[in-house]
View 1 (cartoon, rainbow, N blue to C red):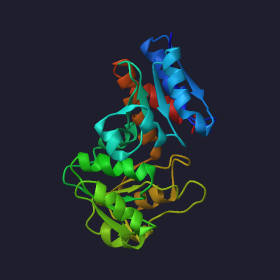
View 2: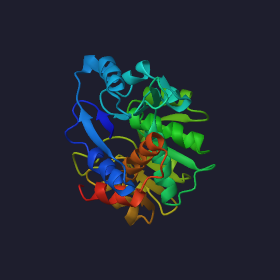
View 3: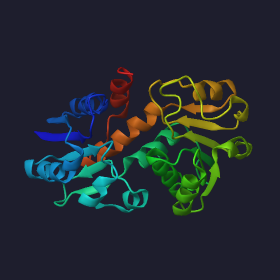
Length: 266
């Protein structure tokens, strides 16, 4: 039996186990997905221990995504983003990957959002914002990053090819000619709030919110009212898991089954 899992602290809230195990059942794989919650200072020992025990693959979440980079052989995308959320043990030495970026792009393409030469505005320059900004740039979009701390937006923009960095107050002006808006902050998770004023949204936009609890955030309600295409955060969560599973197993993921398992718990 193959064992896969999630490395984080805390991990009790994770929706990854039911999503992945539904996929294993659909594919007829003898596999299980479990959670590991090491102390923050024990990350290296946890990865080494997983390798020694024959764990086939790990997802990585808060607070370990950045630190994991030092304990694996990262691919180019994970190295540029500066974070690992998927570890593969199949090739001997553990390799590190970032399927958050892949998940965001696949979520947008699932909703027929054109990315080549699209003008994209990413709100937030933290971990999710970094992954999404790099993913969009690699897909051919022109990326503008806006953040409450302007210096962080500009620092990220210097790393992302062709990107520009802006103050959060610049978002309404940036959206006038934009094709895509992505909220990569936690605004809308704890309160019924949006990082963008409703009157800045328009029907020519696609709007994705990385927040998936709740599924229907204030931003997405406002975007729908403006006639925009909307993509909720569960799609990004789904497709990062799809990308991880396909890397680990070499099989085509049963996306519909994983999506049903995920959404039944939201």
